[in-house]
Length: 133
Image 1 (cartoon, one colour):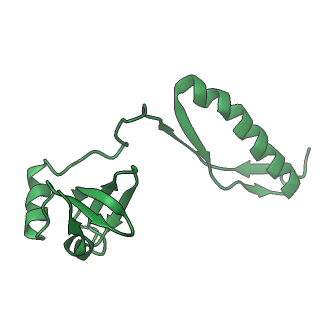
Image 2 (cartoon, one colour):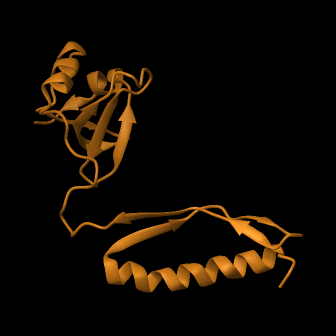
């Protein structure tokens, strides 16, 4: 095969993902195959493969809770956010504050919902949320 077509690349993607399924189950990982860029004349292609270790059911996600860090705690306190409380909004559901990064000016607060989603939000989002516990 000297020339690659879109159909060839689509079939290659399916074959690669099928081959990765055995690696995923063997090593307990989840892989994501990025966009495949290819040169139809030269017969070359390039893509990225990202992998993450899958946790056991009930285990916390990869992003740790950094609110126990004194600097993060002080930044949250200065912003008027209590990291020890649980909050509720209709859009996110029930959540806890897990991080504060001052360099992210627009969305400095990271929250983790009870469903496991991690979201970056503005400080006003927390201030407008209802305190549950």
